[in-house]
Image (cartoon, rainbow, N blue to C red; front, side):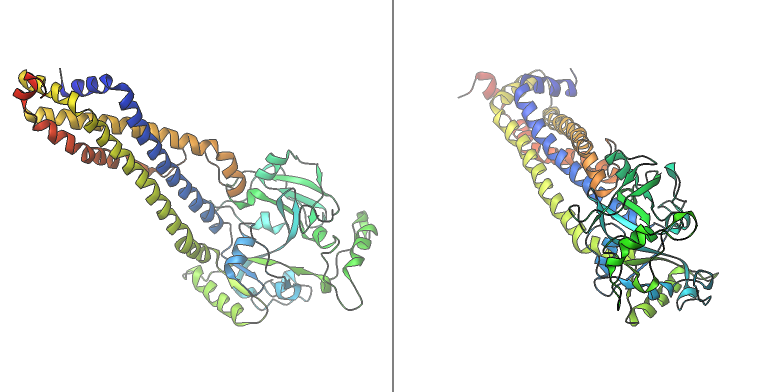
Length: 445
């Protein structure tokens, strides 16, 4: 019989103990795999916000990280608003009523405003214009695609576009209406918007957003900036009193407009990197008093370095300790069966087996237990992550399946486990190697 066959027979003879040993290893490996996949998902979730067609966010003075988290990832609260006049400083002459290019227009390729503060059934409502989906791009650099319907038009004041996850979770379709609430889910109910389109999945925070025409957003109660002699209580009247052809309500006056942030794609000079233009624009904005500029990629990289990676290392350390404890279980199991093993070894030696064969048999047994437990743990870890996949998709905007993972780290896991098992089995293997054949053939004692 081969050494592998002898090791397998030994495992079968102590089947219950072997199963418990492999199970403890499997649970440890499952924790490690789940931790690796979770860390990968967190990185993907944050990385997904770094390629949405803009490389700078302009908002009110304050924390640049908070500005990025709110504007890109739709979490946290807005800092403050910036003025409508400041937003227009990023627009070219063709998009300004005075026909003059804004102060920063020469450095800007695209500037898209966003207004925040409302919710719809737990999802953030973002007021913007048609350029958000017409001129911005997805992570892969391509245009936004619609699973159903089309983008709203700028002259369709009460049109809206739903992110893929929002439409799927809430069961809304093109043509349905929805009414955002002011400030929170239990806030005042606003006028209804009509769904004109549903985005195809992007695996980015965009999937979790409700996007409405900024003009309709401005006309909601509480959204107009109070000015001398004019309060935001006049806003509902603007909605109730249509003006112009087609019965469209009168737009909110410029003096009562504010935006939460501006998503900026900087222009690039031929032959020079776009980062050079972005650097000069950011410095110019931050030196002024009207607002601040933040680079999403830089802020998220700092967040990952300061918080996510240390937390990931801590979790891996804890799970690694679990695996080490499981490997010690192999040692305890094999030492615990030393009496039975000594008799078997004595018989093997009497039948002509060499000491090296005995040593190899014990190590092969440990490797078989480690491989079985490692593979079972790998499968269990992936099944665990897949089971909570819908929850991850809802909260992180990243699709997760059974095969999601961190391939490189997982490829190293089982070999590392095998080495750990061999190390744990060395003591009982050496003990078997040094077994006194004559003593055990005569019987213990």
